Length: 100
Length: 165
Image (cartoon, rainbow over all chains, first blue to last red; front, side, top):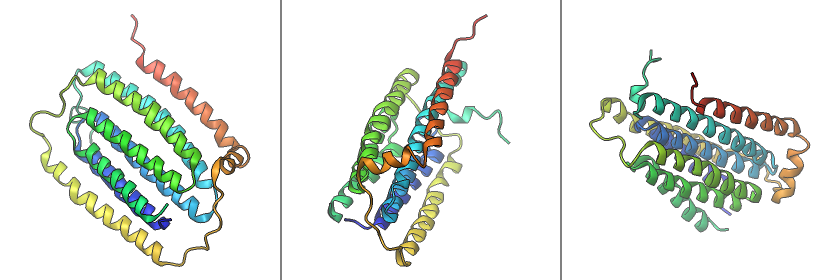
């Protein structure tokens, strides 16, 4: 059995890759997938902590994260499709109306 | 499950995550994300979270990724992110930002691993532990998720409806 800290380190690595993806990519769909990657890394950390503490609470939290992620993906993709319908282009650089 | 299995699965997870971020074609990215979700499901199995592994495959790799692939197919017919990047200077900064964040997180994890951890009790494995928890301690949040999913459903229908008149 690998120690829990290995799982946490892997979770940190995957999370950072997701952060870089959100900053680097221009396609909102890929940015969205990178966010899913980060959520997933956080889930892995939750399960590893729960395993360490010997409770199933971490797993219960991950269950709720999954439900929220499903709702988030449905709404987010609907918003992206609506934006595409309005603008016919798909790049986050075009969506600067509310930029400071 | 030995450390060897962990290292193998972790390599698949990191490699597929890098593939998602650095492949230009979003369909390839989506397939890499499926691989990543599958490898994380395998890691859940090594941690004794069988229910979550199954839910991960069904909900994430199944339902959510089908939505993503569908959206990609509808919105981007084969081309994306072509042409020069108008904000290249900012995007190059992403790598140092990611490296610093990673260094911080790994330092925290290493410090935690050195410190005195609480004695590991026998982890309650299997579906029964999480089922008992979800329907006792977390019953109210569990019911709230149904409201959340309903609200999301109504919102999506409203967003994707065509404006009439």
